[in-house]
Image (cartoon, rainbow, N blue to C red):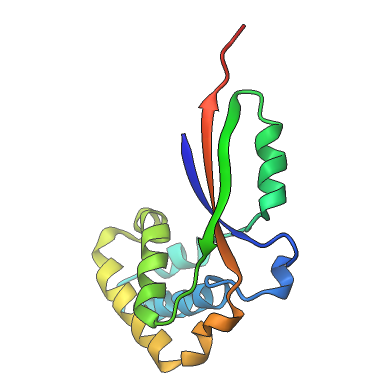
Amino acid sequence: MALVIPAVLDAIRESQTTIVTEKELEVLGYCLMDLAKKGLVDELKLDMFNLPLYYPSPNEMETLMKTNEHLNVQRMEILSHVVFSNPSGIALYLRAALEGLLEKQFGSDIMDELFELFTQKLAESSSLFNPENQDLVVIFVLLKRKLRT
């Protein structure tokens, strides 16, 4: 099994960093509210929607993987820093990560309009995607099932 996990650097706590999804998710929420005002999103479904996120550090991931009774870590490494320098990149990233969850809650009909509106709102607020403030990394973990003895 291969996992690709967004994370924060070990030396940086989540409260000290700007992660590409923290403020952007707030903007995405505003976009959903705009669609609810247009009658395209059910307000009750919007009120019930919650998206808690946690970004582990590489050390946390290593500790978790080592304590797993069913899987061995074959390989684990930090792939890169993820830096988005334009609104479209952020929109594509979040769409890839969240579209399944959003479709389950709100339906597939609004996805194109939602992410077009999201891209537009990000473009209007260029301060949201300053690459110098982004400390998100990606951890690659390759796991293999432990043999039963």
